[in-house]
Length: 215
Image: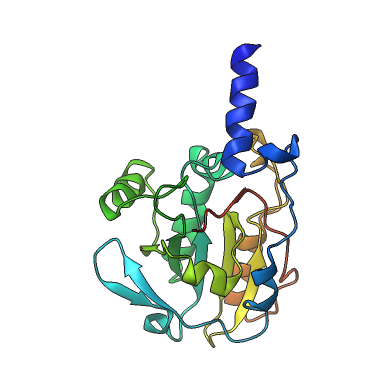
């Protein structure tokens, strides 16, 4: 019982919801999110550092479909998708079809999920992840530009540079690994629509998970 209580307390602390006394993961968005990127408008341009030590810009991938994945390796919602290889499978499907996949880490130094470039690369290797690049956003500038509030938080930019999807990876807002199977994967469906030249049926969903640990 003590172990279970501690586990739940640790989980709540990680999600930033301990003060609520319940795992209410769909908290109201912060005030700054109201003025950020909107779907069916041009995706905000950005430049930030990658784990390679070089800067990466969204403009580097002009004319290509781009997925932006906000992550925090210590978040139980993120672990759900990586421990089941769900996220890795989606990355491989996407990049195998020519899609650019950018994984972004906006945790500030000293907070949950913050990593150095070597640590981020180690995570990519040990989890057998397949992003095109891992980008570091410790000041939170890019995350707030897009209105990323949770991890995972997913975005898709089409070949014209328009933001065509923003929200959750799927329709199962839990940490249960068993919920991956049978879930409606919004990102996969959106990518299929974009690849076929069709409008995304569900362009906006509410992201779930741990709050992004901004400074």
